[in-house]
Length: 324
Ligand code: PBG
Image (tube, rainbow, N blue to C red; front, top):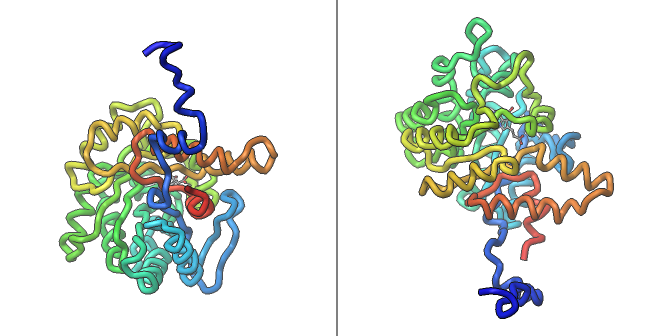
């Protein structure tokens, strides 16, 4: 097929033609909306680094969850911003913790109509801000696992449908699966942050969740952005340990990793379009340098085209009603 007999422009001739031959489509079904839960009542504090997002008490988290459900979004992802932090992150596995309360309130209102996914990690809950507990100034893998298991069980007890460990400790998926099953939560799924990179793109989230490490960085547990083969290894381990969904995070700078994940595994693949991806579009839009909505849709489309089955995005709600 060569020019002039073949003319690729014929397939781009009109709107209906382009719609008909389109290979990838975004739908609200693809989206997962992150929400930030705090204590109290009637709280809805704007988050400066994430325009359009708020710190929400459980009652207001329910309102946004209802909006998400009405927009056709199947799931929310809950993060907690607790009142108290300590070295062991105890409020992460407190049954009256902020995530536990928000999860219970959302499930009470919406039941089966919306999935509640909970972030399982200690970094918002530890006073040092690391994702695991410390031993002589180092993040200690094995003693962290027990606390992650307890956190997951307490989320499941509050009604979470899916728990999402984001700490990058070795062996946490097996530990969490075992802990859930022991407590009778066989039906709670695990969405594993399997290939989570040590990324500058988490900046706005850490400002929102007050979870920046107080010293050092996360390089000893999150992955080196240079490595893709290692991501396949991490995902294989999580699949073996019982993960139901594998995640790549961030998304935009890791489309190759998403594409490899799609090729190598038959599990559902999630991609997390992180805070920095959202914030840079919002910032450029505010400067008048870019059409933010078009740019965001193009980014999300590229993530789906790369092979993601679901996308966690801060733009979920604002874009859900804009899709054809
Ligand atoms: C916590 C966690 C982080 C994100 C989700 N869970 C931040 C981090 O690793 O510091 C980032 C999400 C985002 O940037 O949108 N482990």
